[in-house]
Amino acid sequence: MSQRVGVIGGGQLARMMIPAATNLGLEFFVLAESPDSSARLAATTVGDYTDANTVLAFARECDVITFDHEHVPAHVLAALGDAGVSIHPAPHALHFAQDKLAMRERLTELGIPQPDWARASSAADCDAFIASHGGSAVAKTPRGGYDGKGVRFISSSDEVADWLETGADILLEEAVSFRRELAQLIARRPSGESALWPVVETVQANGVCSEVIAPAPGGEGPIEEMAADIARRVANGLDVTGVLAVELFETTDERILVNELAMRPHNSGHWTIEGAVTSQFEQHLRAVLDLPLGSTALRGESIVMVNILGGPATGALADRLPQALERHPEAKVHLYGKSPRPGRKVGHVTVLADILEDAVAQARGAAGFFQD
Ligand SMILES: Nc1ncnc2c1ncn2[C@@H]1O[C@H](COP(=O)(O)OP(=O)(O)OP(=O)(O)O)[C@@H](O)[C@H]1O
Ligand SMILES: [Mg+2]
Image (cartoon, rainbow, N blue to C red; front, side, top):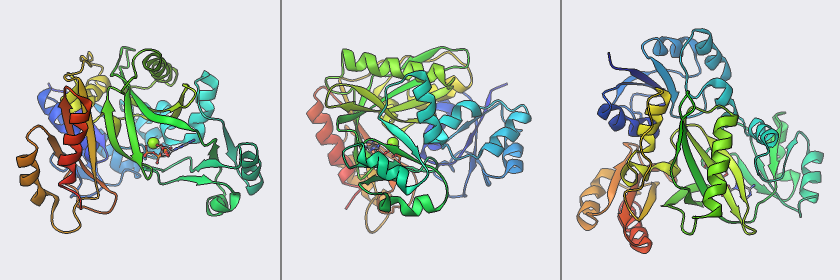
């Protein structure tokens, strides 16, 4: 009998797992927030992922449960665990992708290089950290942040007064002066086998990923080795199963520091769909089912992914498709079936080329047709 995979969350990550699941002959189920979710093309149950009974009923029909996002509450994960459900990544690993303070504490124990950081519960804590870090800091809510929401560059505790008022601790980090941001993706099976794609460069605009370049230009040698070593140590140390994305800073003095972790396919790996022998979506499914992992070899010299953010101000995204395809036959267009909203990730474009500048120009050109 074929294996049944259940994904909690119906976003674009679940959607992009569908072709991989189809190819491998898996049965694929999604627990989505709403009937018009991005992953609605799969067998979908609509239900509340914060309700243990709903999630348990969904999980009963599946051999393994995995995730499209990290927001499933601890009590629901515990109920799944108690019921003997196979969960990948396991709750004890996922915890460190759900809570940035817990992540910083654990990475400190593991001796992984990261920015200076502190836990703050008062205005005085914040002002002391700011004063000892040249007058600025990056403040983060430990939980629930995404796409730069929950991240503030501050120079005074006044700027996070609203967060402190809630009574929850916040994470403070030194404002890293980075040369660029990188991401290292790794997939790891429960039996321990792991596979890494080359380290990539990620570009964020207003806290949101806008472009990814694979492999990271000039990333061969020490940078590549440091990034791979960090990802292996994190994956093994936290016992991560499935795909792990490690967001990194390359500092101006050539150190590699961990920014944050995601334990699922990640925006920095969308290029693997066309750009690698095995995509991150297929590899994630293989890993959570403890199947042998696939080759991560590249299929092009330079691969560029550009996000479609926001979409057109008027009309449907799909209205722009014919013209984009006509003008850019080399571009691989992915639309997520989401309605446009300012800043929202509604699709992406990937281009493989022999010369990096060509890939950048073509991917930007094609993505541009979908935005005003
Ligand atoms: N300590 C730091 N120093 C300098 N820049 C930072 C720091 N932390 C975060 N940033 C910038 O803010 C961006 C968003 O931060 P982070 O990745 O922690 O937030 P997020 O909202 O959880 O992420 P995502 O967009 O990946 O969901 C980073 O990609 C980086 O550009
Ligand atoms: Mg991030």
